[in-house]
Every structure is written in C-alpha cells, then in structure tokens.
Length: 197
Image 1 (cartoon, rainbow, N blue to C red):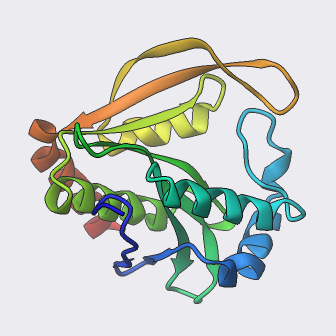
Image 2: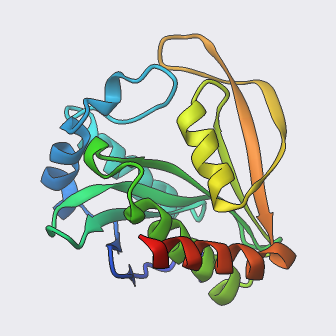
C-alpha cells in the first residue's frame, strides 16, 4: 500500500471524508434514495440493492492500488451524504483522478461539495505532491461539467466513445484537470467561495 491508497480521514466545517467501510452501507443506501440517483441515465450511481457490491468493488480496487474510496459525512446532521474517490491512481507519475462521486440530492449545490473537493485537492497537491489532478464526466452530465468548471479545472478534451452506459449506449467522457502550478490560485478561489457560504 502506498501513500496514495493509505486510508485517511479529511475533515472540514461542512463535511468529513471517511475511509469507506461496510459500516457505511445503511447510510449510503439512505443517501442514494434521496433523489433516486441510480435512475439518472447519464451517470453510474449504485442502486440501494447494489450498494454492498459497490462498496466491495471500491475496496478491492483500493487493495489493487488504483483507488482510495471515501464515504462523505454531512457534519450538519451526521448523516452519510454520498461517496467519492481518488481513482486511476498513478503513483509513479503522481497523478490521481477525483471521481466516482455522487451526493444525495438534498446536498447537491451546497458548500459540502465545494469543501469536499477542497479537502481532496489539498491532500493531493500538498500531501501526495501530485503534479495534476483529473476529473472526468459524461458529455451529457451538464450539471457535473459546470460543477467541475466552477472548481477552477480546465477542460483538456473529450474522449469520444470512451465507455458504455448501463443501458448499452456509448459515453463520450469530458476530461478536466488542475495542474500543480494552478493549485495556489484554485485553492484561494475555493477558500473564498467557502468563506461566502
């Protein structure tokens, strides 16, 4: 296990990112039911029935060295609000992707998401010494694309016919990144946003 996959808890004012565990199962099921998120065709979010298998999948990817999964706790009420990860970890080249993220509908577009991204980016650039952090989303996931742009990430390009959706249709993936040289300005931007919330 490298520093990139070593479990760590990250805490802020609005949220805590806890190492994903099977103990989070009931809270994650309740969170995904808030908005029936698994019914969104343009993204892959586990259903209540498949949540245990999704936890198992993420933990096995952590053991394989390619993912560090978190459960997101809403500190306002103590409830689990979703999941996020460092994924496609490339420790040799000091790159990670922040992805496989979903939040209960009631906390979307709140300071919780901004703070989670700030904590993940701070850890990636300042503890793991990353040279770049990547984000990917489906072309038709306009809300996700806007949210990534609001962080200060820049679009690198579009991977056409990149993956299949659960229904068999083909996904174009939009790739964004923040590089180490941009991090100080992005950090200042995110801290300023949070201070106003």
